[in-house]
Amino acid sequence: MKDRTSIAPLEIFNAENCQGVLDHLRVLGISNEAIAKAGGVVWANGHFSGRYFEPDPTGQRVMALSISRGNRIIEIVAFDKAHFGSLYGDIAFALGEEHLINPPVFSDPINIHPHPIQWLRNHCDGIVILRHQDVWFQLANYENLSCENVAHGRELERLLKPPPPRAKILVRQSKQVAA
Image (cartoon, rainbow, N blue to C red; front, side, top):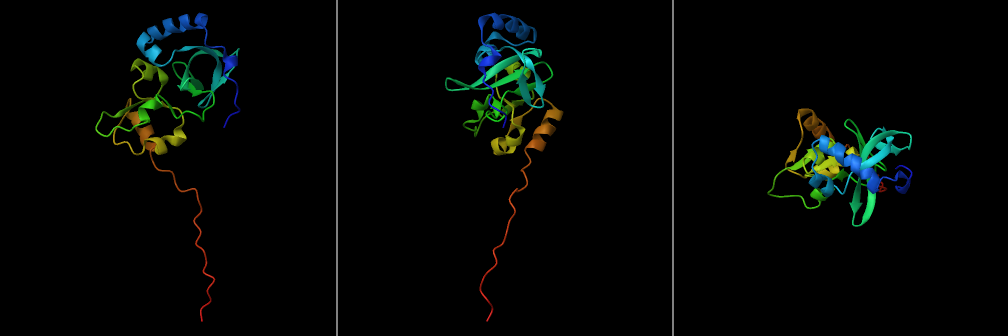
């Protein structure tokens, strides 16, 4: 688990910040409705370190969105065209995880997108996985998952393999003595 850096120093949620990112998202083919559904997308500065985003005022300019539960922001996900990462990395399983609360029985597959830009282009329908270590636990019981392409499907298939047992199994010895 990363240290809990306060989200406030990012200073990403202000009206001046939002206009430029809206124009940029429109160029990427993302509608205003999708942006609103995502809760807004703004600029942030920082760099990516694996699946994490490290805020840094001198870092590259990227887009960021928040994940909320109720009226509380629990995670920030930053992205550019090639990368994405979360601020904390251990709180939210996925962007759009509200689609996973009640698994559909007779329904369309869950759409899994490899990147936030594809998720936004598809009006936030489905999820973007943030915590790969929890894929088996979160998605193993779904009958149908829809992915972006063959490479993405192979990655999902690899992540859906059950983990090996971590516990060492011990057999207790009986204390009875043979007569």
